[in-house]
Image 1: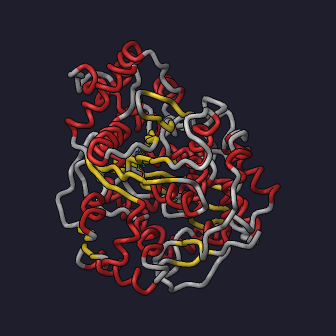
Image 2: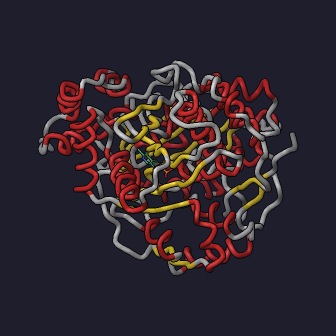
Amino acid sequence: MSEILYVSTRGGSKTVTASEAILNGIAADGGLYVPVSFPEPGWDFNVLKDMDYRELAYTVIKEFLTDYTEEELRACINAAYDDKFDTPLVAPMVNAGTSWYLELYHGATAAFKDMALSLLPHLLVTAAKKNNVKEKIVILTATSGDTGKAALAGFADVEGTGIAVFYPKYGVSKIQERQMVTQAGKNVCVAGITGNFDDAQTGVKKIFTDPAMQEYVKSKGFRFSSANSINIGRLIPQVAYYVWAYCRLLKDGVIAPGEKIDFTVPTGNFGNILAGFYAKQLGLPVNRFICASNDNRVLTDFFDTGVYDKNRRFILTESPSMDILVSSNLERLIYHIAGKDAKKTAELMTGLQGKGVYAIDALMKEGLCDFYAGSANTAEMREAIRSSFEKYGYCMDTHTGVAAAVAAKYMKETKDEHVNVIVSTASPYKFTASVLRAITGDADENEDAFALADKLEKLIGVKQPATVTTARTSPVLHDTVCETDKMPEVVKSFIDRL
Ligand SMILES: *Cc1c(COP(=O)(O)O)cnc(C)c1O
């Protein structure tokens, strides 16, 4: 097996190993790490289909992380995909009507972010050891809800790390806040800030780049790192479940060997769907990736016209993890369809930073043929949730609802008859009020979030995930609330405690 190395999409930094790319997170020139070339595993899916999730994850991930030994990688994977997941399948496939749902929300925090954030801490600690990094790692994260809890759960009590999460005190859902402030672990810090998500994000970036702060953490034997979705250590673990989904269909006789399938992916930062595209580059038989957006349809317009234009109104929807105008992982796709032209990619990204817009040429547009994009508004999302529950008794969350609505439109419009796998990214219990409203037509905004969870449980007959019941009954362990400019002090006193 040949070694896979990584380069920046913008061409301005040196080639690094997988473990170095994971340690660095973002390349020094501001670009994202991409593999110099894709592995060519030559998979026999008839063999892969009999593997359990861990074995399959190892088989897929080892293709990319070639400087990790088998022992190291297996240890990381075994620690990640254990009984934190509420089913030994890890990512079950469920059939409802003409669609299959790949449920990625059975991990510790009931959101798909767990698939990667359960593994990243172990990859990171192993990378530090391999590269003789003596400092311990402190993760700083700003969150608008899902990422914070998934990162906390992933890093809690992982030797050699600490994690501090900042969230907008008045900008996350009640259940999301309770999930975070009840987080146990001797290496965790959670603080609300009085500003919004952008303030939290800016505050974190300032701490990262402040020389005095860097000096301070270094003197204490630490270094900063980040767990956000541009780290290839978050992207690569996601490739595995696309292969897994294909193998489930093959094993159940739904598809014949070699038959191509479609995936519909509710998309925000473009990390999830890009992992699918990577799986296809390694030989997974995929016809199309259907990129689903909500009313923030910047990606839909991009795939339709070849023009990416973020100059538009930001719309708050009931699928908040897809409320995004700059999809950072799209940069990787741009690089690949530009024929690995880093100069071209850097130019386009400069355009995005400056004017907020760029246009790709006709040749690059041809490279988008693996994709179809569509959007669904709130009414369409609700209808998708309601009709699936009424016809098949299957309940999905609002993000998955957007994907199901777009998949239905796609099939109607194109008459595409490939098996369609809808990638399901969150438990309906994370968005109880919205899901109840979709199914029953009303839900009292002012009613206690946990009471609404009980109502939903009665209605759909699916047990609430442990993270929701635990958040309800566990003691609050973190009550720090600060102004944005006090964030460095919070981090300092956290490091003193570590
Ligand atoms: C993060 C998230 C998404 C978007 O995934 P990307 O990889 O950012 O495209 C969709 N749904 C849910 C529930 C999420 O948490």
